[in-house]
Image (cartoon, rainbow, N blue to C red):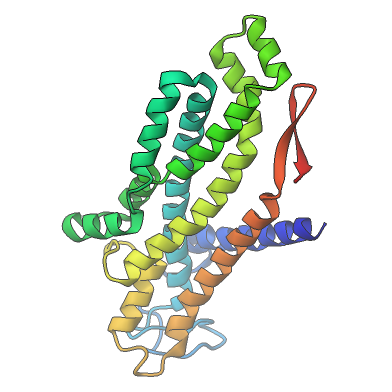
Length: 277
């Protein structure tokens, strides 16, 4: 019950924030790059989060930056989860040489540090935000694949899976109807935590100045505030706006994952159902 309350509350907060981020162009009558007020204006009734040194509305910029930062996380986590689920299922289901080859591949790729790799590639090739997300997903699928593989190995020993296989069902049918439904809960949890990690990774790249300079994101806003002397001028709102948005989003995602990770799939007449772990 306690985890359910946390989960639904986190989902409500995260959903409301996502709606605000993606609906920002329809909410404001000005864009995030337009000069709408006095420079370095503290928060007031008109500009709720104040303005930066150019007089740009920070609320508009934070919401637009949130859309781009979240999209990077969604792209990386989605690709990593998709690859990890497919490769893990295939490895655990077929076993033998297929399992050995994919397991060794996982061992090699999982040793590659994603964040340092992104730093090097961004420094040399000036990657876009979406290219960063693709690289995160292309390298970060191994943890999901290992968990899904372990679950698939266990599922292959369940009587209803062996029974369907004995009746001559195809591998594709068994994987789609009897393996996939039971590994999806694990994949969902891995997707949520990967979303949090990749979102923060993208913010970190922007903050150290290696993000996409052509696209507004939370890391770029923080980097701009720092390099423009926001701290020395005492413009606390310039930092509080993006930091608060990052904290709210990251905490909501983490609590959502926490509320789901105690659940697991269990067999019930050959169908998938959720039970408390």
